[in-house]
Image (tube, rainbow, N blue to C red; front, top):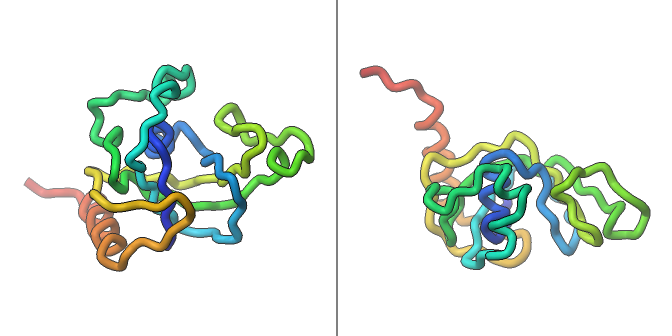
Length: 146
């Protein structure tokens, strides 16, 4: 399992399922499960973006936190068309020009954020962090009997 750190409110938009791509400066050959970590930085101008507002941006939502893992997604592919100047891609309105579009699927927000340190590139989370995420997702999937 790998992880990426994404500035808020973009991380929130991914976690809530509205943003199916992460704009990155480099491609990756990695495919598979990916922790979405909300970095310690916030793009304040983006908070007013119609796309972000449409994704339900609410700074009071626990997924709007910073410095924590807030979701798990599957990295299913990387579109290089825009970054390589090969023309317009079909990655949608969230895709930035001149960026690699890491395509995300099966996004599952965590029931609560897990505080963690991130990095600016693709990074490998600790075994403890991965175990905590898996346990949290497993507990959330089990129906509770009263």
